[in-house]
Image 1 (cartoon, rainbow, N blue to C red):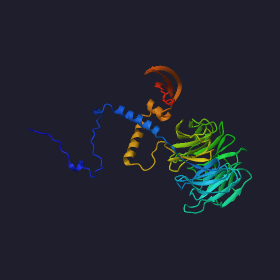
Image 2 (tube, helix red, strand yellow):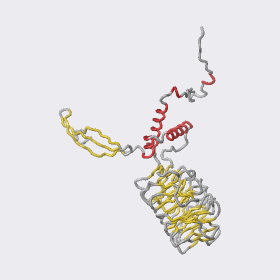
Image 3 (tube, rainbow, N blue to C red):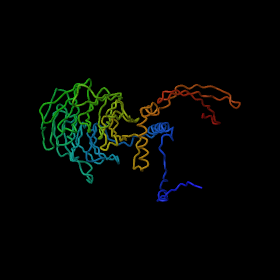
Image 4 (tube, rainbow, N blue to C red):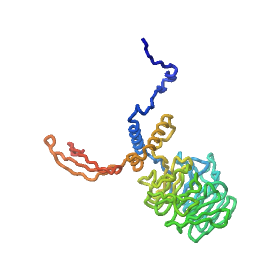
Length: 446
């Protein structure tokens, strides 16, 4: 008689520790799992729902004494952010503890522009008081609460913006004209002027340190090369551009935040048409900033919302707003692309998560694998109607459309019956349900 037995090695199945997981063998033959696609679809649908349910993007707020007008990142300090307000106050914030690290007093009017040097050791500010101030950023272990400016320059006209080179020691200011400065000079090294209108924003190119783009109140976007004495090219748009941001990973592309509520992406080599139009805002877009990865950018608008767009997406991926937040004047991505900082008209800096449902803190290996698996499922089934609707619009909210009251006899007494009709904003489907309302001895309805 022949007996077949299953022989297993004890070394392969014995756990080293009591909390180790049991080893499980699986056969991945698709013939054994005819419902595999259906199961994956349900998991993708549940993952999309959980993403919206656990979406809590707001982290915290940091308060100023006046409306926030501009911000700047420190390239060498991940958790530091400079913020300037309408009362001339400049502060260095620690976004991890949400406290003021240093104050930079000096401006007597609104601060219009802030920028940090490449090594993060210097800060340049300009404002409506026609003064450019240069500051030395103190080290972390310094005991001083406020910092005095090391140098300043007074002009005849107000300044509207400032930006520093990505590589180099030059920075540019804009107002009545475009001025190029050095940290060691007391006068502009070079000046540009094309037209008589006010220049309102400036941004240096991350790939070409000598190339910069400006926007003016005459609806123009102008490109300059600081090595030459004449502008390179000028683009006239239908409405005014409030801010410009270059893509750090694709330096030939930039996106303009426009007064008409849209953002327009352009290729530097072909400015006759926009490569992408990013819509969704209901009012003027005031500021824009790209993620360090170059795959997304954030916008702040006059419609009191902050939106995150993909670089090649026509519609926003996320929309952030609170009931107390007013018009958003400035936005920034953090240097690690994990957070978004916004400054608004209600005297507050707000810190948001770039991914609304992202779990903060250290994740266990099993948690990481689970998140990666859910992301892969959502990416695989994102074209299907239900998953696509939830990822784009969320789960929706049930609004009551009408209520009808009926009276019926229940247990020898007459009780009111409510017939309710509602509308789900996520699915645009109607729902009807009935409920009985009873009265307690104290006369309260329940």
